[in-house]
Length: 200
Length: 257
Image (cartoon, rainbow over all chains, first blue to last red; front, side, top):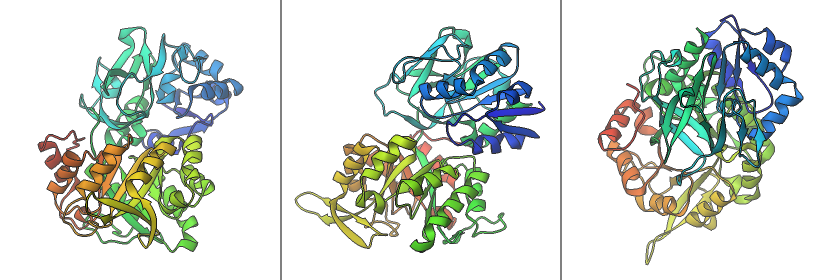
């Protein structure tokens, strides 16, 4: 892939995502400009923080429409953490908020009696064949920091699952759309491998 | 299942690691970033950097340290040392640290925990507690100390941990001043008292001298993570050995080799 745009909409520090992708690709751009999103060959949507705030910011920058149109037209997309949640129709986080709606399903508080947020290294078990997991052994550990999890309506959209008091979807993939709950940019060499797989 | 974590800790003064280390393949054994990368490759789950530069210069050195680490590290890292208020903390997080650790500032001004937790998220606020045994009978009591263990606060360490977690600390970094540096093992009673009292992860620190000590504090005191410095720096054990040892004892670990 030639040009990868990392969308900067004020939701967290993106430097580590940028550094990690720079290891895998020649051209990485961090931008909040919808023109850049349209011009890029692939889109990465990272972010940490509240779902509602994130949608407000995306809309204010006109990025919601740009992302939806480009992804619907087939442009490769990788969501990370909040970027996974935003793909879905709506979230329960502090009121009900509408998401991008690129995949059917909801975002709900983790249904567990364990400590929330779920922070640390946890196992990811792959549910279907995917290029993203090339060279990544099934059951590998990745780094998580989150309180909410996605509940996809369509089972075949689920790429991987993780156990934390309950089993939740820790990644999804459909055609050109992929997203993960964990942070590959903070998951050492296997995380970097996953980002390389996305880029190549 | 969530794994338990091994966290090497590096003391940094004026941008240089203070304790010597064993890695033979790194060019500059005093460079915190190079050393940290080596630990990342070895399988460390996280890293903690404590900036111990003289306090008047530390506000600057700590931001620079965070910035340099963020450039090279692909595992989460925590930076502690010299941050007094929300503005200091914001600078270090903005420079790329995943978490910050505060000790004296939190005890002197507990409101800072809540404000930062709300603004930046509980997951990035670690409250570090240096505790010392002050009463052995009829029940053990520990007191929290500040300024590198030099000043007593009169504050019960376990009560302080409860208050810090209640105010929004995402994690407690608990160091026993009694066991620190002894290599005789972590303070099991202290660690258990805190893990029982709070509902946030507790990182045990102080006293690791061999790999059984790591197992013991997780199994007997339910620590979520173990912090160690000298057993790794001086090459007594590698991170991989430590992880294999803990996994063999039935503890969920992220094995990388």
